[in-house]
Amino acid sequence: MTSRRHVPTFDEFWQKVETKAAKRGPESVERLEDLRAAFRLARELSRARKERGLSQSEVSKLTGIDQADISRYERAQGNPGFLTLSKLGRVYGQLTVLFGRGGRGSTGRTVSTEARGRRGHLAAGHRPLARAAGAGRAVRR
Image 1: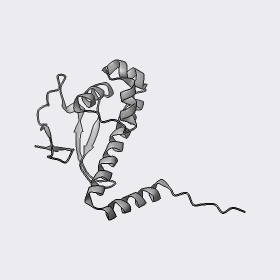
Image 2 (image 1 turned 90 degrees about the vertical axis):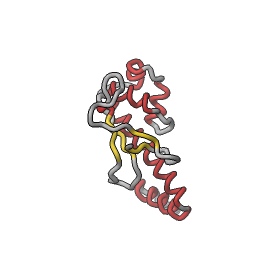
Image 3 (image 1 turned 135 degrees about the vertical axis):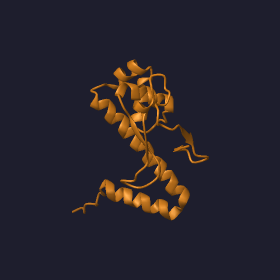
Image 4 (image 1 turned 45 degrees about the horizontal axis):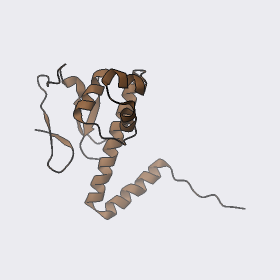
């Protein structure tokens, strides 16, 4: 008779990953946070597309972004730039992207693509974003 091995839940697995990163130091924790942010963005892109009942190929035709790139962004395998996110936001109506660090339920900055006008200019009351030196994330100026 063979004994069954315990298969961890995702939460158990993620707790182990966080613990290992903390033991390895701040750089590992930062890389883990970057990974978490990438998956948060991927989830938001996929959710927004599906809410509108669009396929990736339909989004590709509407935005001019290759379908393969859209697929990569939704799997957190690609890194879309601001102009790409702006194109997707125009098709989806609104995209809310969180910037910042923190664990589950953390409050990061949100940037809505609806804040930009038709030509990409910021609407009144919205401040531009700039990259934090060496941090790889957007911050308010």
